[in-house]
Amino acid sequence: MKTALLLTALVALANAQDAQIPLAGDASLCADVLSPDAFAALSTLQSQEILAAWQGRDVVDLLTEVGDACGLDAVRLVQVFGEDEPRSMTEGDKLRLRASGYEFMDITDHPNLGALRRARAVALDLSPVDLLNLPSSSPEISIDALREIARLTSDLDDAHLRQDIANLTSFWTRSYRSPWGARSSDWLHGYVTEIVKAASPSVNVTIRRFQHAFPQKSLTVRIEGAAEKYRAPNDTQLIIIIGAHQDSLNYLLPFYRAPGTDDDGSGTVVLLHILRTLMKQTFTPPAGMAIELHWYARKRAECLGDIAAEYEREDKEVLGMLQMDGLAVVKHGSVPRIGFFQDEVDKGLVDYVTGLVDAYLPVPWVLTGCGKRCGSDHMSWTRAGYRAAYVCEGPFEEMGEGYHTVNDTLELLEGEYSFEHLLRFVKLGISFIVEMSASSASHR
Image 1 (cartoon, rainbow, N blue to C red):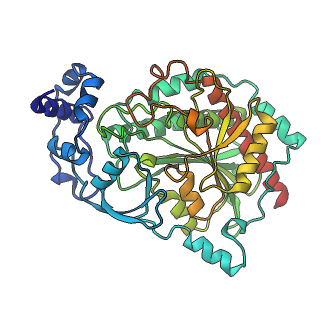
Image 2 (spheres, rainbow, N blue to C red):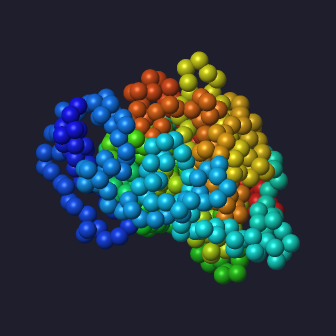
Image 3 (cartoon, rainbow, N blue to C red):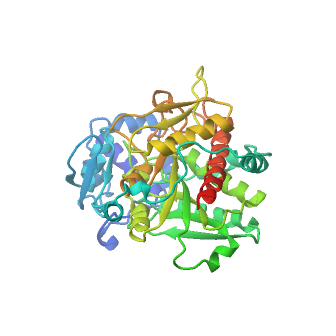
């Protein structure tokens, strides 16, 4: 493909998502390259052509040529996984790192994440995660919890999961800095708002949109007993969190198609189904407890930790945070298993959740990981001094191969995208909520 044709094609791709919104600085300084013919131009292009033409091109140079480089010269402080000291680099350098296969955390806005909790713990001669009388590393598996989990999960099916993943992946990309990413988070907010309309009067549900310094918004839903609105100001409320990241990103072509069907569309729709089940079957958290479901923006832009930093700053007490990221793929010929990452997690919480798998799921679990070269949103919570665990679809070497590319789709995964496996994570999430609520309430 000749250079002129390549540039025309890539401009069309950028136009197709209404151009990227800048990461930093004045948006008015960025060129508007909208074109009514963008989608017509897109329809004539093939992924193979674009990817072949991309080989050997510097990502920042190419973004500059197509007029999509706004904000890429902003300087950030980045902790590259596996390195001891953070690096100072531009947003463009971060794109180069990502295209080269590196993962990292952007710690610019929260370089001292966890310092407040460490200081509080030192004052009490404790470790940060021992600030509370937390459950033991083994779930109690009480008769009441068994019955409640059986009631909540008695009629789970995959119809909503299938429809939800189709809707979510219909967005061209869910890149945090694009209008498509903003639109997908708007859709998610509207959909969640509809789901919680089924809430019982026995619960109070709060939806919050968390504004970042980029277009896509994080979304949190808090579920608590209706009587919690009368809780005394000095009465500590204990919070249980399950999270997933709603964004997607094509690492080689940041403005190109990024369906993110498994990474992390799978976690996003599992959380939707957990929420739907809690609303439909009416789960009321015990007094002094709150359940939160978090859909994070910009995970693939380095786990900024904005929400974890706010919770630390406000001295909120999180009993446990369970991250669900990449849940659906079961490779042909492999045995379905539940994977637990071992890096930057709380071992006690991992032991607790593996106990839930043993008690409630018909498949085994396996410890896995990718060393220091990758991670997920649990890392921000761990660094903030909270107990966190990261669960995934199985061993790292058996996870989906289309991550961060145009190939993370239902079609290209050739039957390895398992809705039966997704339902296991729905049940695991519900078990986590019910068991931890029950055991924690008994220790208050």
